[in-house]
Length: 415
Image: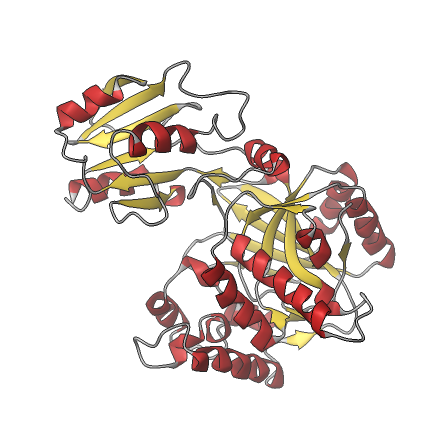
């Protein structure tokens, strides 16, 4: 059963939240963070992307950069830009994109649930990326940014959240860059907090939606602290890490598309002929064409859009991986025809999140940077849950969640 607890969040005063909040560390590069922070010394980028405090070109993995993160974190507390709540709370975090609102509960998730597989993942993680985030958690002794979980729909929690949603939020702002609305409530009722704890305890599993590396790093640092503390009791704050948990049915997963630099020596005609072996190929003309259903792909090639429908027998409906469009396209197009086998390392392919739209695929091909583009139908949350429950791992670059969680609304200290 899932174990969660409230915690004493470290948060910006209401009037400073829009100065402090930022995008997550992993959705922008150092130069973008430098530009977004500008002359705003309160920007959380000074903690989560502290290389911006050094000359351009300084590695984000330089030991001085991690030290600067800790120095800046202390500065934020000393100056009152982040203030710790006097008591433990759960929190509600709502995001509104294109008229649709999703509501998440901000909780302390139990390290042991991750280590023992009750917090389930669907992606592989890279050790170097884990270690980077582990260093960041260690040096700050805090989870600066939340991870993004999904939980099975729960009517009791939904009713509780909706009750708070009718009240004035602690924070309410439209974020720059994405233009989405972000709202935040503090749950201060002991009865409501106990209800949340009890309802999560009935759930056999939680699911990582986004933030696999942050989840791994946060849990591994917690487990490390357990081992290194000779007086460990299990009640320490480091036994928990910060997560925002959303009802699975509320989440929006966008398509995650592919652009390729070449056709592996084939002409356009040869490429289309090779595709016809496993797909029904239909020329859709010059207007942008979006896949309409599972197992249909859109190909952009030579200023034309094509529908590619996978033929019966090319996928296995009983296999949670084999039925995925990311697997079908990887096996039958990228690997078999284009000889792009390792999506993680190949320099011949790039990936475009669905928020940018299919117009971005067209632009990159028309510019000559790329030879062709492939648009996929989005993965469903149920497919992710099925894969996580089966213990299998999704192919790389399979999911793109929007909106992204904003960082800096609340921080979780480990001691």
